[in-house]
Length: 361
Image 1 (cartoon, rainbow, N blue to C red):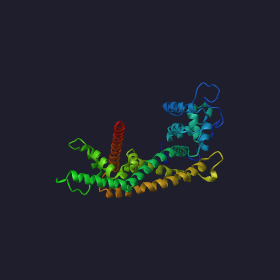
Image 2 (cartoon, one colour):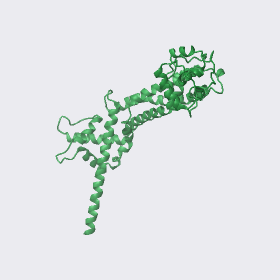
Image 3 (cartoon, helix red, strand yellow):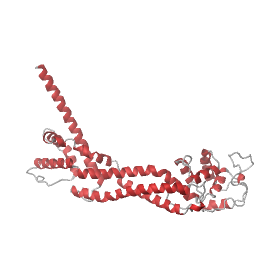
């Protein structure tokens, strides 16, 4: 669940949850060592109570211990699964009114009701829980977003500045003009990158593809260019990235951090205690997360301009999706690498056969 700073009902900083009740917070609770009793009081909806009860049973801790862990921001106890469960059962407005109206002994309540009642004593329980959950998932989500954005930025840079790739394209253009000489397609000044796949589709009368001829020519006349594809491996990686999704997730993380900043401002340092570690722990997290996001956001902001420059450099339409350019280049380099490998293997086989014949002679 993303932390968007939404206020959950009943999260007031000074909810009088223990006023007028017997046994809060130290009395035995149902399922937690309490003496047998004839009946338990249920205040919240049965289905919601049952589901919360299942979750709490897995915790193997009392409501007091769970709330103490939330106050202390106990990372060892509050794993992602527990946080997801707790977030589903933040008391609603109606539940808060009902719970605060209860004046009996806590020991009379079912475990789910006793737990919900206990959460009302935790300052800003709902917002606090959302902030802790945001913190618990931030590192993994940020690493994925950072990796995706860096991959795209690297691919744009490598494609734009690969001298060897440009030289290969010059040879491709010369070859295409030679093959189309005398036709309306001859004398081209350039071509779009997606046209590179035609090198595989176009064959000579001897069934040799134009790609095979291109690789042979480069191996013979420009051997330094044969491994040009090694400069563009990042384009293959970039084909696996959904840039718009990554940028969208980056916005979600930025929004979540803004909400955390607002939440931290609601926690008074003077009101904090040794048991309540929300402000110190979440403040330290905020400082590092903010610095990390600023760096990645700055890189993301450069992608828009750098991809415009890339498209202009290769004569592509502005509307051409960036992932299509990466796909075209990745496909071409992969096929070129395979063809170069096959020709090199054939040369070695021929050389071996010639050597064998010479030895027999």
